[in-house]
Length: 427
Ligand SMILES: *Cc1c(COP(=O)(O)O)cnc(C)c1O
Image (tube, rainbow, N blue to C red; front, side, top):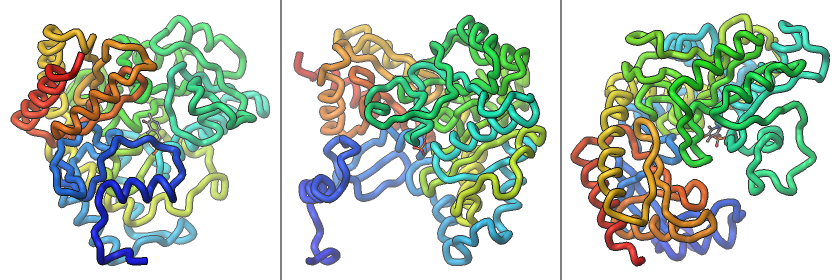
């Protein structure tokens, strides 16, 4: 079979995935072959605005030259040592990333789900060894509508039937409460043996639910009063996406965790990062905590063959430098305000869309139809045909999350595409 010489069409490539790949995704019918900045191109050469950014992994834009350069240099030098030996990239990265986010220590992993698993293990171990919870009794509070990844433990505390059904038996030790409900949290924290509270500062997969202004600060102080760890999953919201370096930074867009407005910063006891840690170039995730928590993990108790590898270390430094040097948090903050204002203008003139919500450049529109309807999907197909790629999160909700390197002119062009698509959409 000829695998290299002939160029396959989009339709042929879709067929290959359909025939030989597991059907665990339902992609929009577009086959991408190249990316640069805010744009991607399909196999036939058609150009699109990427309004998903690989679920906010490509915040720094596709194939950012500084990030790709760091990756190529390191790939030619040393790729993997395992943690059986030291390597000359990991230490400098650990110093850089802990100073960048303001924690004593980092535990490097690869994917978001692995980092969430790491945080759960860390929280439990801390609870047994520092808080004195009796063996196997620790409980972690989570929120309904949560998305933290796909491992068996993580889907154990999901309430999404698709994520969960027929994957049991499930890991015990989780209490689920409503999101954005501090009274429910206060009540749950009264139970015995609560080790921590795991929360997304904005629920991304659930459909970009932004909690009340005071929610995170109140939740953190309730946790502190109860002696439970406040664990922030910023895999999607972190790294400038919501208009601040982290969503727990509140309304500060300085791109530094707490330089300008320390009062608005809600320091997590454990911070979970992934996705844009590498600008979409490589799987890099991280768990950050201070010594009194992180030091409960001793040699041999947790690890990963690829976690902390030299390529990941170099790529992550480059990706985080891009966020700071190109002031991506500020850009996301400014463009996000423009985006929602323009969407509200469009919504005022259509029955097709009910509402826009979000923060920074993590936004969603609610389509005026049922969750089971095809309308949001069909709108995404129509936007694709008009040159902009986005996808529904749940049923009637479409997430809009372009790369943060977007210019205002480009954003206005995207808004024009969205407006045209909505206006021309058959009723
Ligand atoms: C994407 C995501 C994860 C899982 O990350 P993977 O790299 O896909 O394992 C975890 N938490 C949140 C909030 C996410 O958005």
